[in-house]
Image (spheres, one colour):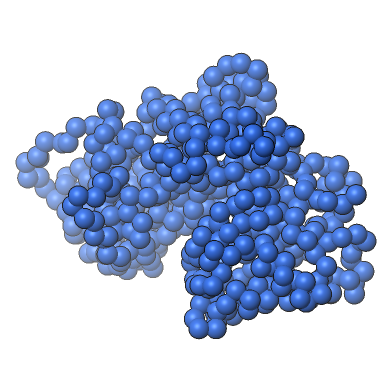
Length: 498
């Protein structure tokens, strides 16, 4: 990817400027005298470990900065905060008292999912789902229109409902739908939102500026489908809803997968940018933080992070996400290994495919990091199959594992600092009544679910930052399928049924 050109007089927040502005950043290292090649490779790793260091004092600063940015984002729309702190208009979370069948539509990629969830007896009695591929011609190109796209989705929904009726799987009453729409929208109510732009493989130009709920509602009506969109959400809000349904002490949700985000329950009176007439009767509101865009001078940044950022599609943006999410961990490791290879070519048997951006994925990093074989054979296999590097020595493999450990540990501990920052913001850390209450953080995403060392490191760092006494009342646990089950549960919570 080519680095973006920036005019010389344009003020840009870059990873380099963030690092230079941090009082706790280490000074530049003095030039070192020439050294043997193996020692040069070892120095790359040593410098990486130092630059990625996340001692408790630094993490406490990150948590405090996160809480401060959250406060600024709640104060005014479009203010100085990097975090958007989007009001979700979800002011009621589902409980076990709601019963009936509710639907969900999860649209965020080249496939979409439709689900029916039946709630009964204080739990999920039944869940039926179907995944539907979207024809490429409906996502982009001359034939891609809003009417065609939402018409196709509505037809699939109608077919799904029809088959359910034939099988006798539906109870009576109005059908209600929770709509997970994973694209940027300007949300104006619980069931309305204007599309800002498409991402991923979508380019349906006439849908931009359109209310996506209204478009879906019209398409369903045209096909005779009696269904009302009760809620428009994103996957993070859905994860919070799914977690809250099973545990009423859930106060926040975090996505740690390819990307990252967090949502939490806020006291509505603390949202200064809400007009008094918008304050809900419940006095609570779910906030979508968009914490991937968080930036602070005390984030531990390296030369590899700065180069990745400058060569990305969005330089100067999503700083926190580029440090902790699954999209980028493999790429950071690749860049470090490429430098090691340049300093000591014999160590990694030549560069192989190391020069190819994003060829190394986070699941590869996880597999190598978890290798417990005596000769680190899994590391050797990954290097050969993924990067074309053959015949590596045990010493080289140990160095690769060390790099994986450094990068993953920094990510996990920074994620922990973000969680503690949210708990600080809602008064669950620093004393007062809130600190004595049980606080549960629901986490979804493959990085947390499948990368065991990342997960354990993050959980340990949360305990370290909170202290043993406070940590006893904080629980971090897995909550799956926020984009599907969560959407149906939010629809249930905002149902208009009598």
